Image 1 (cartoon, rainbow, N blue to C red):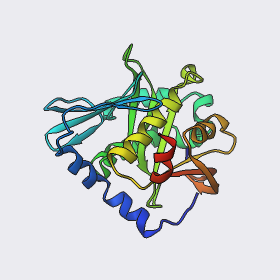
Image 2: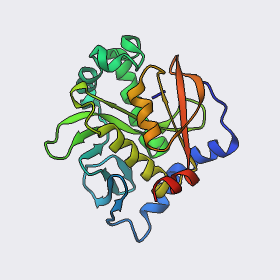
Image 3: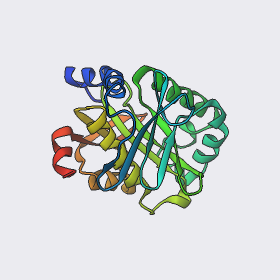
Length: 234
């Protein structure tokens, strides 16, 4: 999921106001526990003074789960796992290959993920199976380079392909982005040959907008607006 695009003022405001929207949401009466149901089940829960979950807001920690998956923040201790996860050629083939998925590059990338939590209130998270606790990949919402756009991203270890996890996590993050964080638009990018990835985007209701260059390679760009999401999710 990865062109060079120009962000309109609305897009930049969309990104910059994202942490404020989350902070406002965390102070609402709904911030204790609630459950959303769509194609997947999304459980956002706020827990006081507990070091779990992907999103930290003041003294509260935000956890997101779908029906089968949980998401948590990356830490520096996850670097060996991330290197192992991105090492197989089948996994890194559409992620820039070893040029972008080597130990040195991933040490920089995991720090970017961690910085995003503080700067934007969102980022990429370690993703695991609720039933076993096993980490199977990563997913989340993050800035798409310097475009002012927010992208949904996901990647899975090969043995967990074709089990519906990509669609489940993507739908969960889209739902969170639109219905909780109040985003107006979310994009996704993928290598043109990565049919499995962009078919998930299409299944989620995202529309093809063209080919662009992101992360140093040509990508297909898909996007979905809040208005379209409201129609898709009914």
